[in-house]
Length: 308
Image (cartoon, rainbow, N blue to C red; front, top):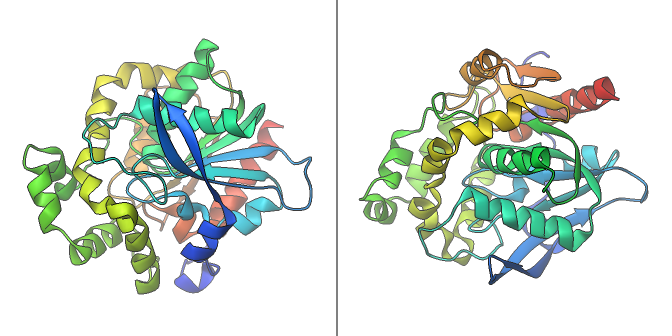
């Protein structure tokens, strides 16, 4: 696809514009009510298929902003900030689980009355989508999934190469480590997982940091990090979800991602998970939708055209 540069990335929707385009809704999940940020746009054509977008850690639905205008031409787009992320509530508790986040996504699906949808997920959102896909396979999921596409993420705990900071945050001293960390450390770690020629700009880094700190969110890093343990505990269930999927599945992967790049794709094939489409971005890192939004969108549309 050629060389990538920051100039190839379209100007993103600003954080405050993003907030104004969405809404804060009160949703009850597991008998607890939370204020959840949801953005739902269909453009001028209300007959378009629905695309549900599920973001990663430690960011938010704003990750999809660089792709949003292009995807909006083809889909009604629905995204949310999961619990502990972005503009949604951020309880300071260490009981965050992937299953609870999946319940929240299904609460949004019910709230929006989504009967059928395609799903595009990234990172932490990949894991949430694996649990949701397992529910779809069992016939108990909310709404009907038409397809699912995974961007870079820890689909398999054995191939997820956690950063040292992540390991420390997960440890018993995670709260202490979290208090010591600040923007400088975030900037270094976050930039590290991007491709060499597609690093985030200072303005982008500042915006990501602003969203993380909204509602005092930085204090949650060590609490949210427990998803790594969830991946190990539920590994068999979530791999079976991929192997036994009844809907088309795709991977669009930034190959040079040190966390879940080309090595994750190889493991996906080894485990004989369903794979209807593979798009590999050779010079791109962990955030392909931010680093190369046009290429990701092109691959995604090719996937849907192929399965239709």
